[in-house]
Length: 598
Image (cartoon, helix red, strand yellow):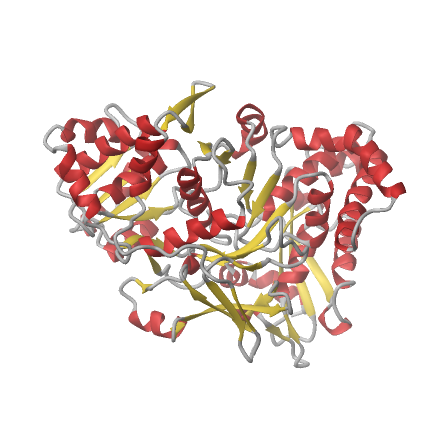
């Protein structure tokens, strides 16, 4: 059994909590711009002092509404300034934040609010309020519902209540919260079964914050900036956002991913945090535009040079010829690619799924290294991460400060340390199954090298065993397929079957360009072309590329192009874009059977 540990950078005191930083910043760095709010097309500065006043006002309103220490408060909204403000206000009032994805169905909302016994909930829109109304009668514990958008909105309603409470009452409540108190209950996406509520303490998240600052000292500096666009209900986005507040990195919020490039251009962040699909979209979009503008050969040459230049860093340094080519393409191509990220972006952080070696080399080669990490909700976000001083493409880095990782006899990754959760809410059985002697069994499979770098090789419960007895980890094949700009999603099948097959969906953004390049009718849908020879040839080429990375027994023998993409609304993917294999297996059972001639 291989094990690697990283010492803690700084211990968490018993009397610390997450809300303390709001007033520490206000008192010592009151004029520092903590946030920039996007209002009517402009970014408006919010200082640390102004933010503290707004948090205090909202916390006073919560106390006036009867929120007691330890009460759970739901928060259902897109990524926006009010999300972070209310999160800190709930903590200042001694409450426990329960995030809910704003895309959740009424039944999902009911489960989370009922299981957590939430006393109050914030929703964003009238549509959310209407959805909540469907299940409100089955939530006897729920005393308050506040809507962020409206007249008056949630903050105005809390402010009206605030006059009943003295400032000192909030500070007394805040100071009574210790680091071992629960700060949040985050419900997992639920790729299988009902979502479980992950209990994270103030200690857990403070440890994560300090580990992140220690991992990225150059990024987490006062004066740098970060634009948050991932859902804050996702632990990765939330942990990084709270870390930014702590490190006095100016934080912006946007939920409109369709206009992300424009927002990046006006906000101009120092770094971004995203899931691999976002980086795939940036890369595919740039490649698509170059080929559409007749500059495909230049882009392809620049891409190959960027990858080679990055690979050379691992071997020491690039030769003179490669450095010259890289400098030329930096002026012709790479500066434009960096401009798409705002022009000031010097690095990125990626988590949630494997990025893929080629994309990692590409982005590092253009001057924006993507620090890939690994973690789960149960580990307060990152448990391992690549850093500027410890970077190995193809891995998810070393353990963060205060964390240990080991590989069990069956290959499962186990984690222990300051960031590991205390248990599942109201679920002692699941807690006992996952936590033993402080070690959390992740369900993921991995390898640990002699330097402590962790490589993810698959998911324990997703291992496919063919009829011939061959064990196949589907994630590697799927990730390689999805790196192709034409492919949106892929799900490998073949458990107890004679060979490996795959269901493929087509990327709707790239599809029109592909049709134009191949002379296909502009109004033809994917459903119209699922049997088109050219489309099947293109997918076969992607399959062939994936098969080069595995043995013959593990390779994909047949594929089916589905007429529609997997969607969250259809229950096939989670809000964080993870496949719900059981749902896909059910929804496309006929297509899977057809692969095997039944």
